[in-house]
Image (cartoon, rainbow, N blue to C red):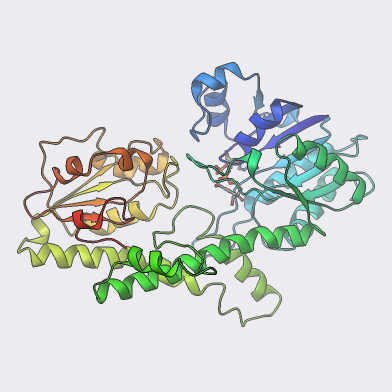
Length: 422
Ligand SMILES: NC(=O)c1ccc[n+]([C@@H]2O[C@H](COP(=O)([O-])OP(=O)(O)OC[C@H]3O[C@@H](n4cnc5c(N)ncnc54)[C@H](O)[C@@H]3O)[C@@H](O)[C@H]2O)c1
């Protein structure tokens, strides 16, 4: 079976490498730069080490002409939102066109599988008609369509492709067999959803639920900070009840949790259901957390009798989540922008963040390594990277001046060391 993985990012690349062990697989990405990097054995997602890459025999291309005659195409392209928060379906549309053209005239009855997160109904409304148009083939007669959402958690995480349940669905029963064979080569845990829409909905609600739960924790954290009790202590006590769900307060950045609720709210508006009070309810609170942190920072700086305009701040960690090198939509980088003109200096340090285009703006403020001779008026530990957890807290505190304004946002160290945590 010949498989083509389309879109080689955080989702597509690990999939390509997993499938390569069992099948004849080609990876396609429109970005020539990414293909060049991969051909030079550099995985920019950080998921596979350069050393490991050298040992894997893989095939990648950015040439559309090389996309013919595959049995299966698995599409893993981005699904962001526009500035107005409407879904940006351009990548989905473009990749559907590419696949449509690629399967034109195919007698292989290919299966196209979408892995990107979308709203329920998107595959049938957007992808399938485009593929039919450009291929001149008919769904369920000359090609099949499946949806299998990705649930990996990039970074040092126990949730990997091979131990996470994979939901699969298809437009037609016999093509499911092919999908089962493919995905069973990666994980033993397969769940067949009733249909494509159900599988699409299952994925998007996972992230909506998470967004809402984190928002609740954030709101509680703001209350507990005001009444001077520790959020972690409260959550630890509450978790002793058998049905209390564990969530932590935090900054919601990235391109999934903070984005996916807008896909669902787009659908609800489209189908004329305007009573979707819950779906976006967490967004406002989660978006406000930057301001909450900054307000507390400024309050404490002033309380110590320091002038804001003269203060120097160090931020430790600026990826959008722990142990992952991805800086897209990082809330910490937003905090940096909010602070930049209000204080004298803000330095950024992250031992694992990837050197992304997005970082050009911050270049002058990014430290390659920490200089322990330097003293800052406040230090913010923003991301719970293993690197920081393993660091001695005394070393971090030695970067603070005598006021010891240490913000441990995620409560990495004992609460006695910090003046603020969420
Ligand atoms: N990253 C995650 O943790 C994660 C987890 C689960 C689901 N998802 C979802 O998976 C999808 C992909 O996410 P990602 O993080 O891998 O994105 P990414 O930005 O890391 O990678 C997407 C890749 O697709 C390429 N691309 C864009 N348009 C293309 C086209 N027309 N043809 C070929 N390649 C194209 C881009 O160049 C890029 O390399 C999104 O819908 C996302 O919401 C992501």
